[in-house]
Image (cartoon, rainbow, N blue to C red; front, side):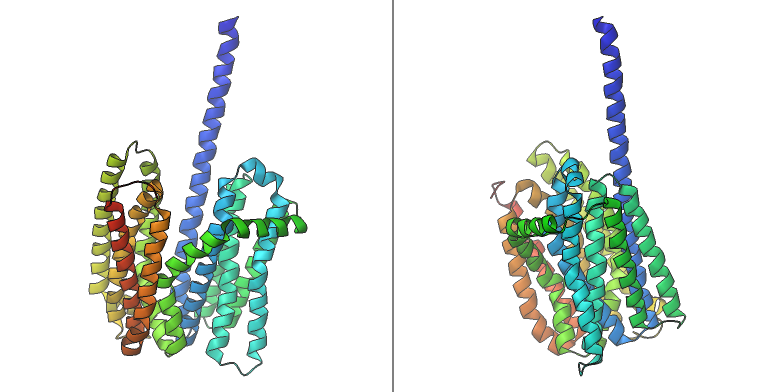
Length: 422
């Protein structure tokens, strides 16, 4: 009786374990596919905007992109990561509150878009109007994609996440083709994205089949109280050397300089897409390390590997800078190859920062890490003003590289010190 009754239990457990593994593999495939598809779409979209429109539009889009990514960083640390760390059962039970919370997060982006439309009829300069409009649309895009990435996985619908990314890529391709063909203007392109992302938000709400406004407000306030401070610190200390130089450049220099900044940066982004993919797999391997000594050796190997990949990619981009600019944008940015070369050190440093970040999280050195990033941000912002005055867009790129140097060097020195916790 014991053997007879035990065998089916083992079989059932085996089937459950297999189903869990299959679900896990399916979720990883969907999420990695989503991130890769969105990253490649954004890369292609930047190139298309640079080819189809002028310096004002590309500069405004680049600034709007930075605003969107900064706010997405706030959302990730204050809302998305806490959601990812909760159980699937909790997310399913509170799906109405989560969808409502997201609607209140999107509200400022919608209001900013309305402000931009009002500004079009006021005396605001056209470039300022384009920056406001671009920022509003980028906020809609990145805040909604970030929420969908966590929410759909938590409620067991990862393939809808990939379908949404496919829709975003298809819409981007259609709007980019229409722009390149001269069929629509820049404002129409942004309007198309805004409409699609609002429909995307509505579709996610329909998938949830629930909307609890009061609970959503309470959930948003609770997340802000509990995680808002750390979210602001994490975002501000990173944005200071990654986005702030572009914002300063857009404020004090002619739009052509910001356009050069954005156009040249986009040519190095395939390196980031490639290494982000490696980093996901390497972080999974890192999690399996059993002691600090082996994990430290593993991280050092990754730092060397990522550094070599970054240098080789950067050297190829640097030597072919003028050709790459011509291939991507025609003759619009001819003669600005130095800007591509100026990005190479920053992207090499960004590359080696990825494995170092794994060790920071493993050792829980968060306070020191944020302090170092804060110092790097202050250095980058302080350097940005004189460098931009002297060298324009290349000066802003140099300020980013200086900030990355301070951040990576400081993180490396911190990790070399004894002691695993702080």
